[in-house]
Image (cartoon, rainbow, N blue to C red; front, side, top):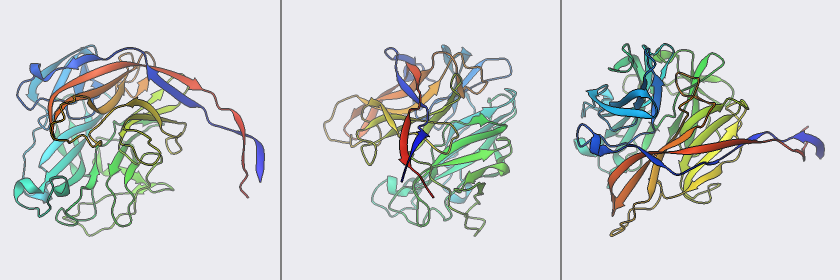
Length: 379
């Protein structure tokens, strides 16, 4: 049965307002590892200066008076021990998300990669088949100059150890930025999925990200799923609910101040509802129900089939993140002026990436008002 007069939700319409410009070139880095390799995350410290994390697994921050004037800080905020013992969750560590209320005490979500093949603990034929990912909690007491491991460290972990299921990528990885709403802090965390757990992005919530034990994942009804350390506990968590349409990792979430709508940006390869490789966006009123994904930029990404011998094209893009230099939020999770899409452009040569640049490109955001349409009435 059809019911007339049902309202279709408002949606954001996002486009580009100009060409890209360079934010950071590794030529100005402190060492050869200072390449952009994560979604850019930024906050304002207690002095109002901007701190951005966007580089590799030695966490040299970009710092400056504002987003328009950043320079690399050669002091490491977090080193990667490259520990061969998987139960220590201390192989490659990336500062993947930050949140602070006062600019001094900073909570962080850290993307940990355990590369079993590099430690002689994998029998899989490919490097990706040896990857085991976990999302950890860290914190800083000095405005992000030095991070230390929180206790308990686990925010999101597979309910099995790294030697289980080798041959494919496993675990939780690539958290989005943290963003605030109604007194809580949220983040999307992506999972590869396994028996009983769908692959895609799940929504996590905490009342205080500097206290790691408070993180919970949405299970389809409430924020109740708590993940344990699979090396120290046999507790099997409830699956987290994959939020549609996010079958790929959600890279960035911000609130559009003028409309109150949320904007999520992600990269995807051609599959299902994603017709081509590239960057996509979706909008939401409540963080649970989202619009279909809309194409923002058609381009090859790390998810694309770009690994071809002799391919010299330098046109893969990755790690999109929306940041507004005029954001009223200390954590840049609100857009109110002219936001930019920050992203990494990589030159590829065969199966390797060569030179990388951190770029930004201005965005335009408008609101498409919901129309009235006939929908099926549910009993």
